[in-house]
Image (cartoon, rainbow, N blue to C red; front, side, top):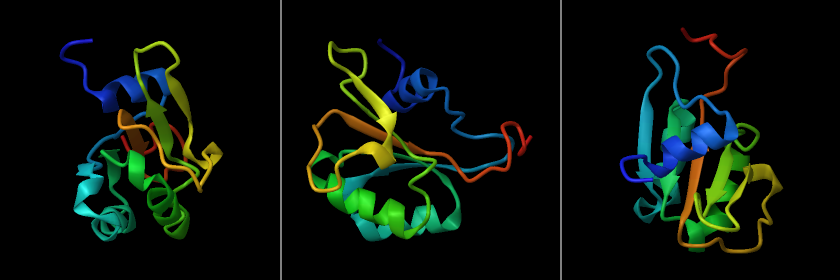
Length: 116
């Protein structure tokens, strides 16, 4: 849908709040590399990642290493026939993903609305 970003669409389709209160949100192209992605995750930021399809195995490895895999939500082909929305932990860590893939990783929270 024009004007709706993939991260907003994925958040709505998965029922995942991106940020609450004063939580920062990092928009992250994986073309910047897994090291910088790791830094954003280690800061505890909410992260929306794009352009990681061919780097899906490395992306999942960083999510696991930082303890953020359980919060992460994956979406591919959003709004298209056969769209794929699921927890990132359910992805095969050995296979690359499609080009039109988005990942949102909200901060760890104790409860919904807990950061308001």
